[in-house]
Amino acid sequence: MLAERAGGPAAAEPVDSAGCMPRAVLVVPCFNEADRLPIGRFAAFAEASREVDFVLVDDGSTDATRERLRDLERIDPDRFAVVECGRNRGKAEAVRAGVLRAFERSPAYVGYWDADLATPLDESSRFVRVLESSPGCEVVFGARVQLLGRSIHRRPLRHYLGRVFATLASQSLGLPIYDTQCGAKLFRATPATRALFSEEFLTRWLFDVELVARMIAAGGEDGRTRAHSAIYELPLETWHDVGASKVHAFDFARAAVDLVRIRWHYGRPAR
Ligand SMILES: Nc1nc2c(ncn2[C@@H]2O[C@H](COP(=O)(O)OP(=O)(O)O)[C@@H](O)[C@H]2O)c(=O)[nH]1
Ligand SMILES: [Mg+2]
Image (cartoon, rainbow, N blue to C red):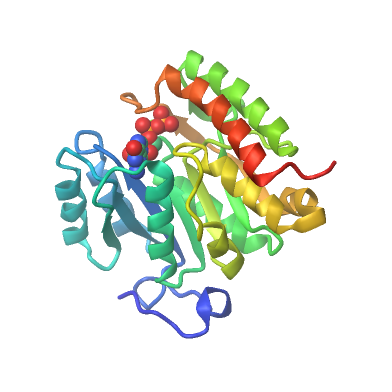
């Protein structure tokens, strides 16, 4: 059973779900995912691993996503919670609503994970281990790096467009970040982290870039240096592009415009 504890997330020692607090809560944004949501993989993972609970966000889907999410909730209501966002507002706001709900469970770590499980759930334990073993690290970003001995499968066009975008994002942020857009991220659940999610995001898809911009801004004069040591990019063992993406070519043009908006809005820290 998940129970709230006094003292806030940073003050409490996490225990497993069979006790009280989940070690990690992963938010899964879902928009029209009824046909591709791998319910069996979610259920099997929750059964096998007691350290992760889920907040499933239905972002105003027009298919049977909500019913599928409720099915998961029925399997284990202590481990799966459903948030419904009335109308479709985009991944950014769906993740934000889910993260704020996740904080109410007082976990040690809060993150988000794409519904298609392009990043398998098994990878989440590696994210947790990084935060456990590195007290100075606040955030772990999955990074899709094609290294020998890994299983990273990305369609070539998506890969190259993604690399162009990642380079632009890195330059715009003034931070040598490799992969802002991977849909698997885990944060230490502190008040500072929660504050990153307190305001609405400017963009629908580049909120990951906005989160980094917010971290830099929160660090003041030393923002970039602090963000550099607080963010750890973890090269994934496995990442498989799952078909039927909701991101289209037009979105890459839109992304370039949004990068400019982000830079304008959050400002660029001095080098
Ligand atoms: N909330 C919300 N989530 C979305 C929307 N579009 C996509 N998503 C979710 O964002 C995640 C990534 O979407 P996906 O289509 O796999 O994008 P890609 O892997 O980057 O091509 C999935 O969990 C989707 O359900 C949307 O309009 N609203
Ligand atoms: Mg995907």
